[in-house]
Image 1 (tube, rainbow, N blue to C red):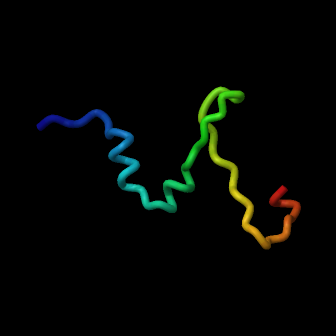
Image 2: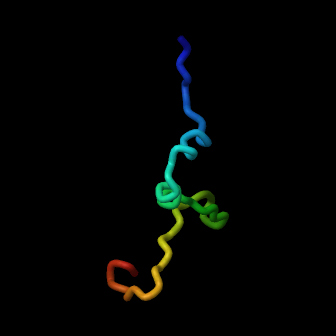
Length: 53
């Protein structure tokens, strides 16, 4: 019986729920030299606090 050395990224991505995909989403930023996590989007109607700044 042969063992697979790795699992493809497409197969792993297919197992994630839409909420998990959004949590791990990245964007490409050439000025910074690669992919970085997407900053959280502000929710309209919520006040800004010291923690959110």
